[in-house]
Amino acid sequence: MLALRSEDYQQIPEQAFADDLIVALQQAAAGRRIVFAEDARGTEQTTGDLWNEYDRRVRIGAGNYQVLTWFHELLDPRNGVVALEFASHKALRWCMPAVLLAVLVANVTIVLLAPSASTTALLGAQLACYGLAGVGMANERARSASALISLPAYFLSMNLAFAVGFRKFLSGPSIDDWKSTRGVEK
Image (cartoon, rainbow, N blue to C red; front, side, top):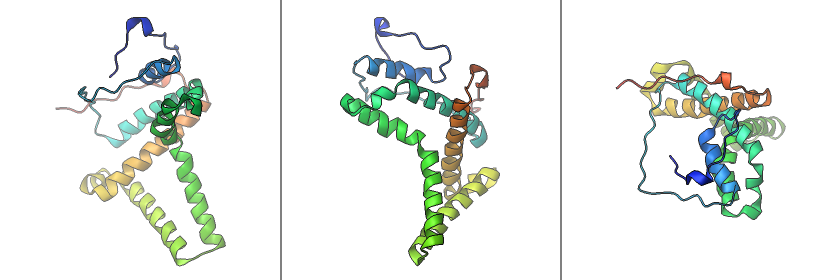
């Protein structure tokens, strides 16, 4: 949710995927303050289904990378708190698929080149987490039965969705890629 003066509203580019984020970033880029209203409340109804959420996150991911290229100047440290908030709350999360891959490659490389009990244990823990995620992504019943499976499954699937969203962004996403997800039945 956000509110702004009608005279401060700027047209959203037609090819935009993440219009709500764009409106806020347009205001930040124009030097306007963005104020958090602690007593404002909103709810978002999700599908409750990992794979419907995955599809939605792919689209959101493509829009996130689009927004990052359009508003990269907000990451300039001279923008102070805005740069810190944009980097820490948005951009770093969008880079997580690459970070996860780099950490996996680094851990495998370390174990192969300089194995030790601790590095092998760390790689084992990482692979076990990915294994639990895989079980959860493949099996809804397992996901429903245990947070030890559902949390890694959700985390990994959302990061995979961002990676696919990045690929869609690079290939030039179109608004035709958007598909609505069905809400949860009450």
